[in-house]
Image (cartoon, rainbow, N blue to C red; front, side):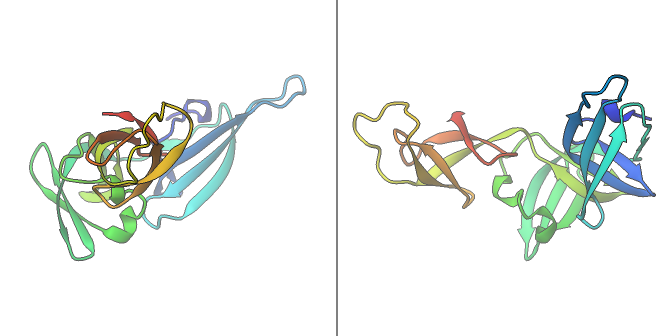
Length: 188
């Protein structure tokens, strides 16, 4: 049973019998003497996808949810559903594209390092790797003499998402994109 002070982003805890994933975590230290640190936590209900904001003292105990983490890979798209395959036993899990809304742009056949959260054999959520490599398929031409300055231009990636990239990058280059912020990190 983790304490509130031990929570980390991505952990899954049981709140009133329902699994909730930690999405944001903020520690507030009051200025008065003897006051305990308050942890403000934003959870996502893994069944309904609703957000829940809670505050805890550092020594408050939370119940860890009974979830299993397994490595998965993208298999195929079937209408409005996305099919994933367990990398260990090759079993398949089906998820509605609606449940993956923000993550779909980062998922492709070559995305490695995805983790599925399973409870009672049902896929609750998909954890993406910290970054993914993607190809630029459309961007304005590189500007001659452009350096690694802070100026950016839009670039459409192979999955259809658009990110801001430095001016010197060209179509066909592979770049690394942060999956939590959706921002360009570096060339791959």
